[in-house]
Amino acid sequence: MRLTLAFAAACAATLAVLPASPPLHAEGLNIAGARIVDLTHAIDRDTIFWPTEKKTFELVEEHRGLTERGFFYAANRFCLPEHGGTHVDAPFHFAKEGKTVGALPIERMVGPAAFIDVSAKAAVDVDYTLQPADVTAWEALNGKIAPGTIVLLRTGWSSRWPDKRAYLGDDTPGDASHLHFPSYGADAVRLLIARGVSVIGVDTASIDNGPSKDFLVHRAAGAANVIGVENLTNLDQLPPKGAWVVALPMKIAQGTGAPARVIALLPR
Image (cartoon, rainbow, N blue to C red; front, top):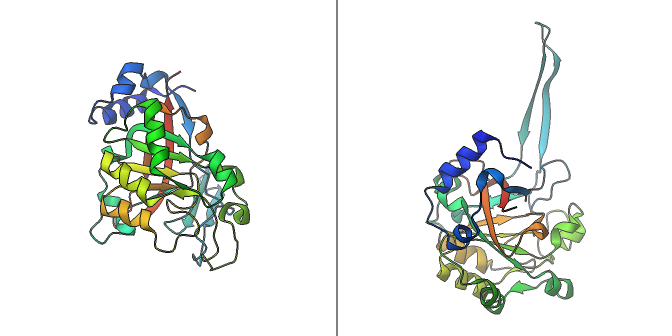
């Protein structure tokens, strides 16, 4: 897949404001020639939202057909909660002093990726949480996680999308008390915060695992103004390091979260 010249120029301008990334500099990632992987689920009537949401995605067709002047025109109206499908959690979601979506610095949403795969452990324990030992084991093979890194956690759960019961562990309407899926652990996230990461993303419905009641990961990330990204897909196509990730949410000024289009740029 080739980038258009306009998009390549926009990406290059964005990346130019970020700190140099030694791994990517060494590998010589060519933005214009990069392979693009879409990490985003499409939004439609099958999109999974948090179980307590009373309304989900609504798309209303307002016009489709020929106008009085004889040309075709189509337009829709949509409505959806902030937290559903592939989306960003702003720090304000769980931190009173955290940044809202509209206030997020755009340079924190574009950066080099560290990809950690715990799918084998999650296959054994559906409520598995990333441990500090998983992080240090990754670092032993790939080098210490640098400040500004976007960490992506693969559990294998995106293969269950959009089967709500399989994905969430329970599909009781309005009830989030019986969920089961893997995600980050609080101690591992505190370690990642100490490393200075910008974003933590996962291919499940939450950066806290399903049984969580205190949402310690959300609270720790929010307090540190670390951005969360949930319901990712296609993480199996990423290398442990060497990719850049772009995770741009809809810019809702006071948003606690927002739908996002998330992509990875990989060297060929």
